[in-house]
Length: 352
Image 1 (spheres, rainbow, N blue to C red):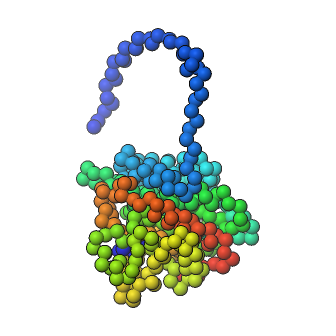
Image 2 (cartoon, rainbow, N blue to C red; image 1 turned 90 degrees about the horizontal axis):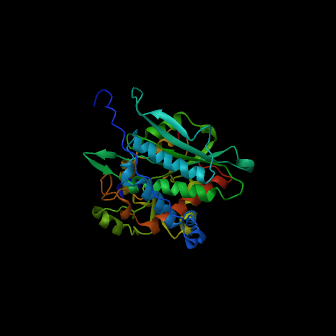
Image 3 (cartoon, helix red, strand yellow; image 1 turned 90 degrees about the vertical axis):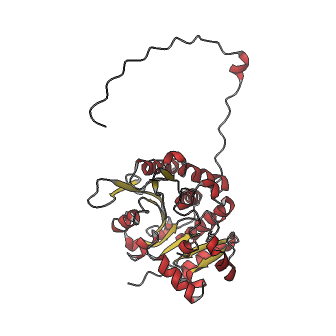
């Protein structure tokens, strides 16, 4: 992707009960202490603010979650964090539950889950759907080291969470925005492929999908790409990569307009010279959850900044992210979703 290239047995013996501690003497509080007010908790950061996005990244890429490996208890703990946020903001599940569980493989006893919530549609477009998604798993623990996955893909999850919080406050008529956080992406797009085969809303009513994967670092943040960035005059600190806009004017216009509001350069594969474009398209094929939707006829966008020198390494940690840039990108991508959810036109569907 531009986005990629530039990118033991038997029960244990019962221990003897510990002695009870000596009772603590009761001390009456002083009059001053009794009169002191309880400090109020700090206010939650504003939607799509740098502080809010950073908090999500740091929570999901915390050492305690050990890299959120697909089908692990750590991935499930990450899912619980995401669901807690959705509940906090009164964003309801799209069905009876937030979780759509699936097996990692047909013959496997291990499971993962997609997390699915909804911002209901209103008005004439209410029965149509735009999917707004990001994968929340990463590589877990390998050879004793945790691959925390701050950029890949705590950054994308943070953007979708905060975008959902912002969109939930708006009242304009629109299509339903379906929020999907995919599990088990890192082992072959398993979660998104499962959703595409078992959609909670009809695929025929799904007019577009917007996927967010790795948007927290400068575009193509690799030393080996410095010359290429210079040749095409790409500003890594003010750019956003996208796949899926070619020959789709509705999607292209939405992406361009949204990026303009955040002073971001939009870079799509069709913006590169033909030889580079062909390499990018070949390298990108099938490498993001957006492709699971394209395969079933849903036009999809894939926003990302490409692979960095810390891609799929233990060094992909929260301190490496460019949070002001992540904030501008998250706002722009949320605006793309907003535009696609309110436009009277539908994006062109993939060729059969």
